[in-house]
Length: 252
Ligand SMILES: [Zn+2]
Image (cartoon, rainbow, N blue to C red; front, side, top):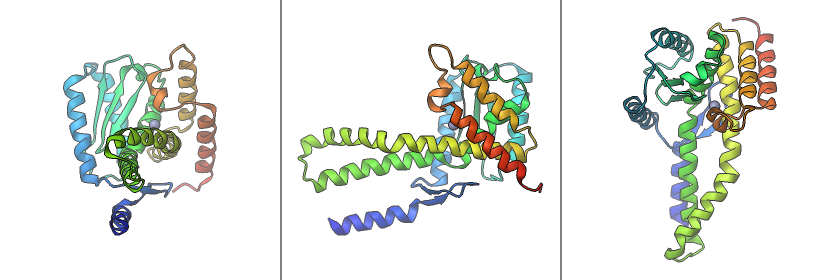
């Protein structure tokens, strides 16, 4: 048992070390970039066959142009970028691993200019190039694995192991996944603003956009975007602080 645990721990460490771009944060990732791209591709195909895509040619063109400009400064040569607009009144956008970007018409509606579109584009692309999805999946796998190992070590009878894993899953979700997720948001904000800056967009519009999102969330039900993308004053302050640091750097 002990030997087996050791072998597993070494195996986890061997595949698990990666570094996030820009921030240099050490990441634990057990999913290979190829697996991740494959998952992104099949998810994208599923979305494309089910969603109602916008037929507004000018809007599609605009999103594609801004997306390509941001994508060009990521240095990601293996990505096959695509930019789609889904015709639905939802305030959300996302980028799948491998570079498939989706914007909903609902979020484009509250954007006042290209720079604000670039702000969300940068943020979503940042999640993908920093491999946040793969990191989250790996953490989930590791916590499931941890639950199984613990259940065995504690000699929990098989018929109770399901219940145990469930309880463990819940606690590890609250203890691990939530702060982890906020950390991803913060990192995506920083990388996103940096991409905007590198692509020549007005980074101050990122602040304006998040303020608009905050305003838009003042209704009864918060927009869907906010359930996964907490918009709050601390985020806005963090972005403002990061812009100051960025603008203090000598121009390259
Ligand atoms: Zn986000």
